[in-house]
Image (cartoon, rainbow, N blue to C red):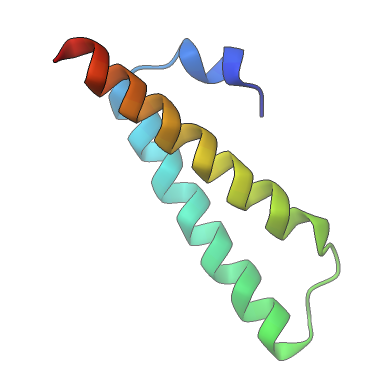
Length: 65
């Protein structure tokens, strides 16, 4: 996911996507713990996408304040 794609979204859309990514992260952690995880790189991608969204939300919040 690119930052330019995320900048076009509203805060509500970003928060919704953040929730989806956190659910996916939970499922990936669960799969990893049970030994069923095949794509280990996806854990890193999801973690970084979450950080990108949180950073953008903080930027938007700081800009509006």
